[in-house]
Length: 163
Image (cartoon, rainbow, N blue to C red):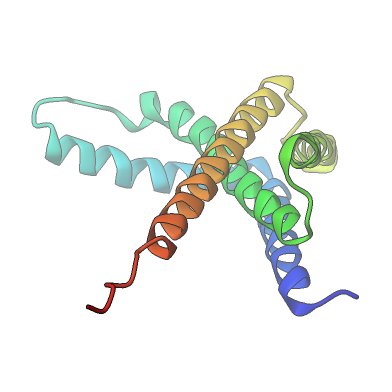
């Protein structure tokens, strides 16, 4: 039986995939405006933190755009890993299923961009997305192991014996 405990994580996955789809559905002009706005904030902040760095928006925009790919798929992988775990799919099967879902979504996302004005598919973006997903899965697994260890230590506390 499908419970809310198992369904809710998958709702998060679908919502995150919808966010990715909406970013990819933006025509190139709108996407560039959004990324330039983010880049301006990043460059302004870095120039304040690191005086005389003279970073430029134009030079930094490409880095911001590719990092956005990496981190949005890192988060997708965390949500997918969480959903799989709550569905009882763990271990190697969970790892390969999580990376498979993220990779296939990255591929379909790039194919979708064929139909978006000014955009097109890039294999490099699928590779960046997949690397982000691998890191996300790794972080999720490390976090899960740390949580289990912490819960184990917390549960092992002995009650003081009565004398």
